[in-house]
Structures are given as C-alpha cells and as structure tokens.
Image (cartoon, rainbow, N blue to C red; front, side, top):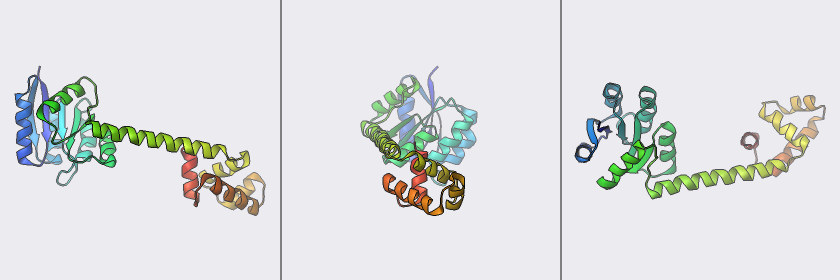
Length: 212
C-alpha cells in the first residue's frame, strides 16, 4: 500500500506543487490538501493519512496548534512541519505539539520525499541547520542545569531548608516560626541564598531551586 499524505498549506501554488511532488513519488499518494487548519481538522479524521505535511503560518489557527489537536484525533499519523521558520521557539513548539519532523519549504523535492521515508521508518528528519539548533539548545539547557546544581550545592543545610520553605510559599515570619529562628535571621539566610544563586528576587531563587 502506498504511503498516504495530506497537505496543510495556505499558499495555493505551493500546495499544488507539493501535491504533484507527492503524487509523482514512488510509494506515495496525496490523498487530500487544505488551505487552513480548521478544514484540515474537520476532514483529516475521515481521511486518516499516514503523513501530514504542515505549514506553521496558517490563517486563524496556526500549524502548531493544529498539530496539537490533530495528534489527539490521529495519534498514529506522522506530522512533518514544512515551513520557512527556523527559530528555536517555533521548532520546539512544533516538536512538543507532536511533530516528528521539521523541514524547510525550499527543500528539494527528492530530499523531501527521502525525509518522509525516514519519518515513516521512525526517524525525525530535520535540515542540518535545524538539527544544529536543537543540539545547541539542549547543550545550553544542560549547561544551565549544571551551573544551577553547582550553585545549589554551595548552600548550607540551613540555607537549603529556608529555600525549600520559600518554594512551598511560606512567608518570612512563617519560616522563622517553622525553623524556630528569628525573623532577622531568616533575612540573613535569604540574603546569602540570593548571593550564592546570583539572583535578586524570591521568584528567581525558587525557580532555580525547582530546576534541581
């Protein structure tokens, strides 16, 4: 059976071109195409394609939200984002919504077909540039987590207790009563915590504590 593909793209000319590319590729069949997310969500559960090529910048509902809703309706359908956007936020929003691949619209036809094959085999095809962005983002997140862990390890046992109570939402007086120390001592501990964690507010301190 050929792999059935649906297309969600608001540019009529590009949508027609993609449909031709898919229709001419061995082992593929373009079964439907849509100019907006709303029409796609209404019809795709009936069509049940193997793969959906999804634009991000659609009128009204965007492609990322369309993917999120579509995956609840058709969890087995694989979605590839096909877009002009390469910023980290759009990439991660799309992947978090349930997309399995992320390719650029100007990807050559042969490479696009190969990417769909790869996705069907369980891969997550991306251009080298996009994959690099994903790797760098994970590396930055890992480095930030390591830095936070090192900063938290510098806190004394009592400072960690105070920070834990801050994270639980207790006010200074409640912390003082809980630990049986003075209100002024709580202030001193919190000042030291801020210095060691290199933060200025309670919210920032708690956010770092919760990253541990």
